[in-house]
Length: 488
Image (cartoon, rainbow, N blue to C red; front, side):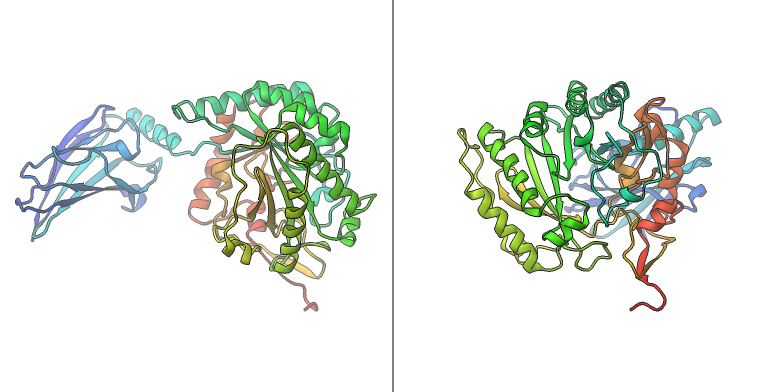
């Protein structure tokens, strides 16, 4: 048996405290130290697990508890021949009703093991509440993706999109509101990225939730506002409004990314979108954009040409990509078109991208779980096969019904990663929330931080961490589409 003992009480006063490691006899082999932090308030489930590898040494070493932040450096090893930080396997903030913490140190070597236990407590309830709240805030991931809706108006009526069923008012974002929103997002990302050192960050903001952004009469001005705020705006467009004038404005505005949502492959599907011309006209508009990109040598503008994959998914509409053969046909067509455009006066320094044959062999399935499978076409141009876009089961095909889910977790971690800002300034954590059913508040009246740490979003994250779905939006999105009674 190894040595065991309770080694005393540690007072958490905001300053580092050093404790002894469990002793083990010297052997010319490394020893492992596993430190586990737990709380009675959480049924002694581990709150954090740190694993250290100690080099062979007769010195016992010490461990410093550094409570300012509940992170990897909460425990710092003071051992002459070993790295100061360990690998963290698991880390969650303690519940708000935590009264004290237990720290268990288990050290094992080739022929022996030892355990020590420390009881961590605060000198006062005020100090305890302050640390617990600080740790909880530290555990909230920053926003990775911002989506800003410039308008809820759209000039198409796609059967797979809920825009045609929208109940909230149709509107255009005012320039004053855009200034307020982008200045707050810009200030937030500068604080978020302040510690990234020499790394140049891409402070992308996507100008889309619902609607067609190019319908906005002040589109170029709003893009300029976003850029003045230090942001890198990206556009989602259905391409129907592309012409010589609008293409010129797109390049002059300084966009860095455009997703061209073609979505369908044939005339029947294109007509069903509510388009007034032919799919050949639509493709010629895209070619004109690509040709102008070449002419200007604007290779920093990344373009995605997107189609929707219906194979294996319950998606409404005709003309979607249903087979590998259709995906290959799309890829072949755009590959040949791009290779025979007029060459750029100043070619890109990058090589033309290659594509893995296993990806091309199965162009409908991204093994990483990303719903958008990218097939490179040219420098900065990808063909995108987007799987099963139904806005989180907001639009169900005829003859189908939805069986909502009660348990699960968002596969995209949206409550921890996304902020969608609607045309009126109101906010959701999900860009699939087309009606903003969540509505965390308004970015016109609050900061990004206040909305991102709101009590409602705290509760949503807490429940989803336990795989409980409390929002109808999430229950619908993670639900199962099944045949209605009497339908195959």
